[in-house]
Image 1 (tube, rainbow, N blue to C red):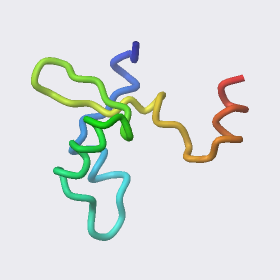
Image 2 (cartoon, helix red, strand yellow):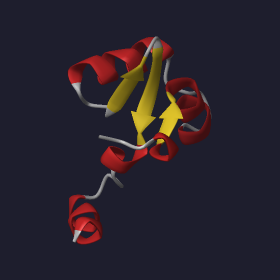
Image 3 (cartoon, rainbow, N blue to C red):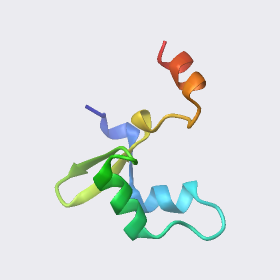
Image 4 (cartoon, helix red, strand yellow):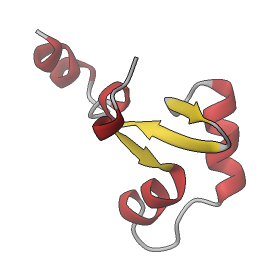
Length: 66
């Protein structure tokens, strides 16, 4: 399970990870629901799990995992 310091609120993720016109919140919630975006729900808040997110490059992710 993700530790608190490795989680970021979904709105903060949207603001920091998308340049230009950010992805709409509806899309982010859909990605969270279908598992495309690794998230953790704490009460009513939804957080993105930065550890599970990875780099987007399978080779780099496998090297970083060890």
